[in-house]
Length: 503
Image (cartoon, one colour):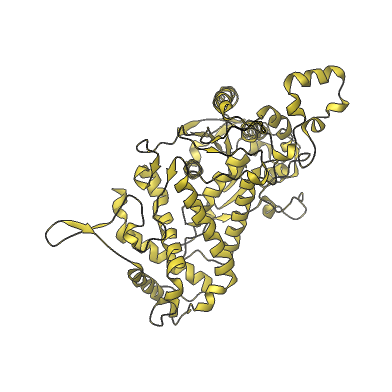
């Protein structure tokens, strides 16, 4: 194995609002497991005025944790965490505009105050005030911007329209390379995403001096996914968010998008997704209380990013801000059922994610259930003469603080998808009968009489592949060797046991 990602373009990934942050979270778990994406590095830029948004904060924590694990690894023998995820500030050269080293873009004027102060309502003439009052209700005008736009895209469009004047947008423009690509993730039924998406496209496609690289921005390969309603909120008279308006807002936004995005070929590829099977969450107007359970729609949305990066360069040409060819795509599942497992995935999805995701779950299960016992046995892979892995490894910062913390979030992600509506439970987590690891699938083997029976295997069988890989791997740092051992052993296990899933 060699690290070929360095030959691919950079991907600037704009994730708008809570939905954007949750899709980014799903993408990070796919990349941690080794799912391939044709990007040399990914630069996520989260746009949300609510800087205490629970979903945003959790995603940023996961991304930082991803980085801390990745910096200890090598990628000639290991595919876990192979994709580089960087902040926009990390690309900024000496002498460039200084921006915070964060995955979240700062939006001036939204940390404190209310909407009417942001637009300068008090200093307006009586005529202009009257016009503003026709467009915005009193509740809109007195809304705190620090909690976002509460499902009001007309407010969001005013505030987010100044993002193109920010230092973050200037750094993004200056660091956009000739082969690089841009992708935008947003919802269509709220406030931040529905407003931010078309404005961001407009600011990219209409770029001009003195912004850096205006011609490159105009013609950059640009893709996006717009997420239709896939959850609801419980009725609550104390807040302004009402799920009964979600469909009407979606229809209105789609009409606007047709005139200003899809209908005029502003995008090279536009992906659509949503679900009519929904769960209502307890209503929350932003801040730390806005933290939804992970949902399979967010995982499927992350797949659109992989798909976009897989489109050949010649199909992503633009001329003066207009795509030569635009693609419009949707995602579908096999069987409209409330409880999904891997058998409900199409073949393309299985090929893209199932092997690496299963490898990581196999590794994580071993670490959680039997690693302590395995490293105490003198005869196996852990006591290799090259680089022995002893019990003191289990209390190192890498294993105990970085990797184990990331694994807690990874397992949380799988647990939340499994209990959500619509649910997705690809794995029977923590099972000791590893032949039953993948929900809805059991590897079979032939019997002497010509029939079939489950091809049973357990943790002790796992050690055989680990011992085999131990002999093959060269000397390297203990963290690198540990991850390479499990990556290669689980790859061999998957290919021995689970390839029938692709038939």
